[in-house]
Amino acid sequence: MPKKDYKKKILLIGPHNPNKIRIGQYLSPPLGIYRIASYLENKKLAKVDVVDPTLDYQETIDKLSSRKYNLIGHSVLHPTLKGDLELMWKAHKLSPNSLQIAGGQGAYFNSEEILTKTPIKRIVKGLGESVFEKIIKENFKLEALNDFCIKKGVLDAESIKNFDKNWFKKISMDMDFNKIPYQKYWGFMGSKYNKKHLDAMKNQGMLKTIRLMVSNYCPLGCTHCTSTNFLKGQKVTFLEPEEIVFMMNKSKKSHPDTQAFYFNDDNFLMMGKNKISRLCEIIKKENIKENKMFQGRVDEIGKESLQEMSDAGFRIGFYGVETFSNRLAGGIRKRKGNVDYGNIAKKTIEDTLDVGMMAQFSLMFYLPDSEEKDLETTIENSIDLMGKGAKVTIFPYVEAYSGAKIIDNHELTYKEFEIEGNHFRISDLVLPNEKNIRKLAKESLILREKLNKEKRWKKYGGKVPQPVDSLNLFKATYKILGKSVSKIEKMLKSY
Image 1 (cartoon, one colour):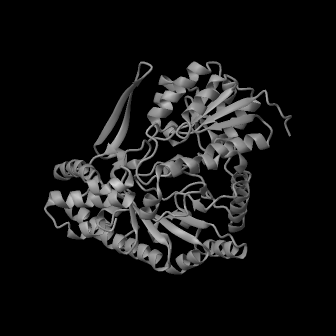
Image 2 (tube, rainbow, N blue to C red):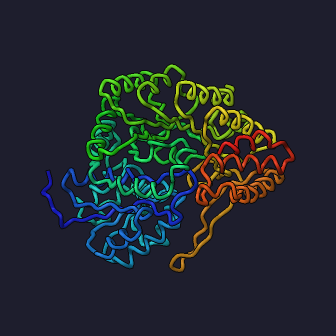
Image 3 (tube, rainbow, N blue to C red):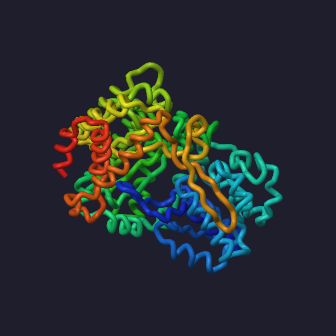
């Protein structure tokens, strides 16, 4: 075991979103870099500080101003890319002698621009624990890692340490939850959503949530997804049910006020029916009363498993439905073969509601191949399900994440900006192909904003809850198309 040496100090910075959160979104700790921090400290390789600039920007600046770090690592996402790039330069000015590297999907898929237009010296592809360990052991001499570069400046974590499921399980279960300031996150969210918001979103008892990652990634290849390509080629690994419960108990011991656990994997349900059943049995046996939530696909769960999950205290299921149109679902690889995806999605959501859980599903409303009939199919199914108690999260357009397959085949919009004299042009949104749908999308979003500002929503303090925002987009779309909005208006009156 290496000798403990706190002369080696590392700062890990989470993604920076200066715009904070959008309607219905919850800010949560950057678990990936907290796992790296735990790994390095458990091996006594370095003292590691973690900061989240979205939660507390001033703390980030204060840490950088101390100039005490050998290495600064940035976790980068595509949606936060501009804020992350600005922080790279801020870090360089405040702590010029610190070596800076970056990782995450946003860094890897924009590696060429980041390496040529920022002070970042290396980009990490894959799980970063082994890369940080290697850099420290080589005394921060990056030339010693050149053999592990898959292209100029990009380090391949898997070539340093081949992915091993037992190693992944160990670094996951060794997470030091005492390092994670959940109370700060819970306080922040409490200041954003009042009781009326939580009631409308059916999120009472869910504010003090601990998110857990119990698998490495999802390999199913949806065309709008970046993460499916980031770790492509690795074997999918899930923690065993006993290991998952160990993490639940460990995190709760560090944070006794926890109200809920959220299994935040891209596809939690991919662990399969047998493991889900065993997990539920152990949860009940150990009397873990906190609420539970999961995220998964509608085509990978049946009513029997949903009932078991409900009996074990699962209260919300989040599903990435994206569309109820079979044609569109096939285009984005949500639909497998010739199955009736729209009906499968609807039945799974109904089954979730039937067993006593709340079902929340996401939509990418104006998919690039959308036609008017597709929009109507999605609206009618969504309204029907919302009338039965489901909730909807809407992304009006597909967000054009670098590294996603969908951005290669359609027209995009871009964000352009200057940082320290360097010009950046970053993909933003995927536009509908048909001109009439593109026009409808633009006009409906303008009208939605007007509807969201109606006097009747003042009781929510100027920020409408997510169900109202979703219904107002449906209403705006139908009004422009000249269709009846009576069913939508009836639902809006309930809020």
